[in-house]
Image (cartoon, rainbow, N blue to C red):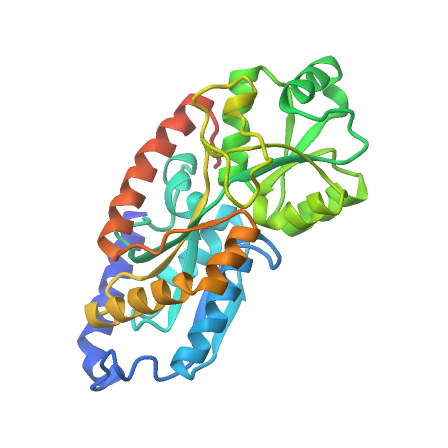
Length: 328
């Protein structure tokens, strides 16, 4: 691990030495001078993917350059994030990191190929949103207390799916299981889309994932919403009851998503990216789209986002230790 970091640092130093030649006289006014790739470390269709695509459309118009979404799922978001950590620090490759890939996994995984802060430049937090605990309509539970009682009565019949090992959905449910005593078997998926497909098909009875990804199915009556994981109800789904108000006071496990560039990206480019990303996120149609899906726009400054990520690493780390969860 240490050797890998030394090699990565040496590669960055070599790149930075060549940066004036590679980037030329590139300034915030001329950046980007080629297509930009935003890596989403999950499959298409989930909350993170939706956010990235909405923002990418706005950036493409502003920059007059293609902004390509590259879905790289695996290892709870680590696979795609590590790819960006190792990319050239010129601002043309970004990652939309999430709670798992850039806070939880630091403690959850025994071996991490990168560090969320020392290997990245935080740009801006895009959103914060609830995870939603949902069930197939045939599951005879309409609220959290009924679900807990049902699983305790027939534990062999029930399992839950998450977005993957190490994700906020996985850890959030494990914390709830520890508090409720609910013996619910974990089935990790590579992102929300395949899990939602199994939920809709009836082969998976319970799932937890970002509300934006399941909101259309809830509204269509194809899934039942049991609870959301934020501390308070959200404007985009005011009828959705929280875990906290259903017998578990103080429970809060709210996922977030934010944009990162590789460490060593020049500050003028970092500032340009941060400003343009925040501007795109604050556009009224983007804000409304995210609100309709259950997400709240943040769009903060790089220094604010860095401080937030540091706090999240600490707080989710405590959650990992309490739950006893670990991933090799």
